[in-house]
Length: 128
Image 1: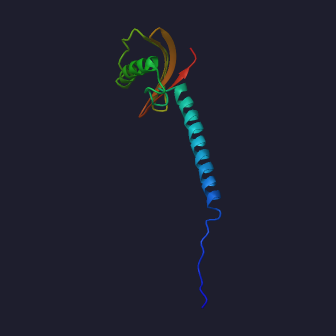
Image 2: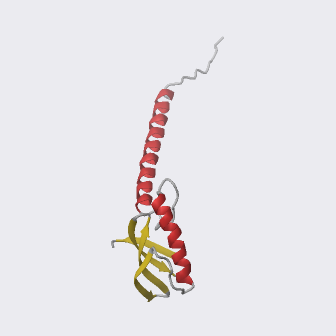
Image 3: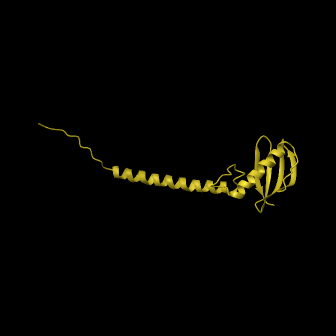
């Protein structure tokens, strides 16, 4: 009597395991490099990108953000600025928005920022 037996071998499963580990390592490495790149861009101007929080912004950036919120409310209400730490260098009204170039004195540092206030508030660092 003949007996047929199905034999299963795990040939190549070790190769697939190595490939999966290498792929996982590459994905992790790409994720790490990508997060470093995004973090360095966000850290270059955390207020302009809207992330004035700890990993990207330091205490001076957070103080500048607090001062900038006071400035934005004054611009929206078309009120004069009474802050001693803010100097308006230039005002422009174009395209339905107010563009102000400001010189901010924050924690012993002087920073210049261009602020566009319309429906949204956008700002960027500019050289003084």
